[in-house]
Amino acid sequence: MYERELREAIRAAEQAGKIVRHYFGTGIAVAKKADDSPVTAADREAEMRIAEVLRTAFPGYGFLGEEFGQRDGQEDARWIVDPIDGTKSFVRGIPYFATLIALEKNREVVLGVVHEPVSGATYYATKGQGAYGPRGRLQVSPVSTLADAMIVFGGLKAWRTTGRWEAFERLVTSSARQ
Image (cartoon, rainbow, N blue to C red; front, side):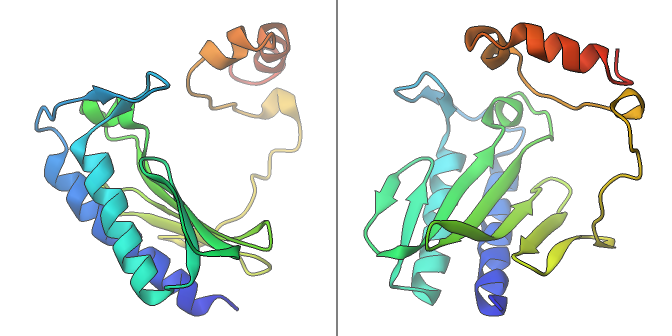
């Protein structure tokens, strides 16, 4: 189920990855979007390439991209795309960012692809079929308690500005990452 969609989503992510790699580490110009987040030509070109690949393969599907927003298409099937998740890392030359593509059908995400342009690694999952990466099927950690778990997190601003700082602090303090 969703084999063709998965194949095309991986192809689109890999092609976008080539565009992103071309710009990585070049000192690319950075603009600000209305929400004050950064955007580059790499973000925009990668999203356009993803849209081209996916809309050619699935012309009736809708498309929602981080950079250009919603495009016409079926309401019951749409691609959701972030061409560079981690643009702040990308513009700083830090290789921890990825291209994200999801397929939503009838308001449920049924497929997801994560492609790391720098490493070339691709991870994917489809509903009911499990998740896979470069080394095969992914599985959850065997760690069974929070006290033994590592918590990985990005920015802290959202925790502070949403009134959840104390809950976050308790979570980290309860984990193996103190």
